[in-house]
Amino acid sequence: MRIFKHLLTFFVLIVFASPAISQTKSKEENEDEDLSYGGIEIPGYVSANASFSFGSTKGNYKINTLVLEGNSNDYMLPEFDVEVGIVDRLSLELITGYRKLVSKASLSTSKSNRSIKTNKTSGGLNSIMLGANVGILSENKLRPAMYIQNQFYLPRTGYSNFQNDQLGYFATFNFENTFSDITYLDYSFGAGWDGNDPYAIYNFNINPNFYLTDDILVYADLGGNYSKYSDPVNLYDIGTTITFSDLFSIDAYIGNELQTKSFAKSCFGALKFTFEFNAFAE
Image 1 (tube, one colour):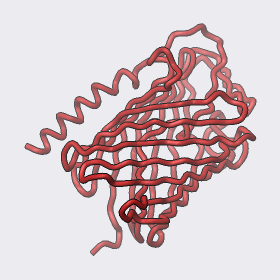
Image 2 (cartoon, rainbow, N blue to C red):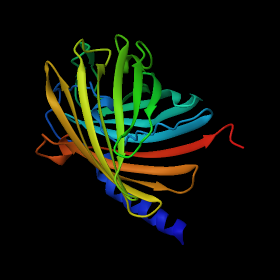
Image 3 (tube, rainbow, N blue to C red):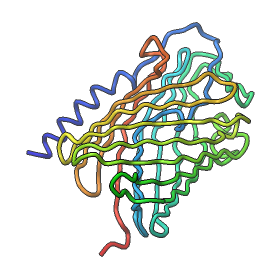
């Protein structure tokens, strides 16, 4: 009976997220579009878990979509994220995926001064990202749990349309406070360079989480990205995580920009399947 409830909830989430996944915006053709987005610009769910241990392995299989300016959709079909514990509180991470851009407009990437002159599908391997995540503090009363994410966007990797010109690097400080058995708060701030823009990007996220049941978590997220010569980008999303076992969970969220006047102009959404295990557990 419990499995049936989980599957029913997950079906409702898919129905809820499908408008964002299938949405295509209308605008005049041949208008330039900025493709300079990345994980840094989409809040999503982040936990400040400082207890990642030797042999712990987490794998994420993520399908997400971003609606761009003009007649375009940008998809990751899928994105793979594998994180492995090296020693206690230190893990290494590899992120890559197949990216697909479906457009009827002339596209350009303003930050790297490159143009994608096409009115059809463009797809290939996205830039490869390596990460080194370090747990600093465990939670103790009012003191939050804390860990640092170090992410490196490797230059000249992936399909030519999606490559970074130079090495990109982001450092993010993540914190977590537990308020009750059903409520906790994640928050973070960070800075870095995406490998194309010479100016630093600064970001923040605040993410309250609530357990509806032992296996169903719901959350909201507010985030922002700021750069010296770019307009601020403030984003929000809402979502849920359904845990089926200690090994497997599913995450679904949908969001948008705060500045937009129309949901269809900058919405994004994702489904994420997470597998966790310890290769050396007895």
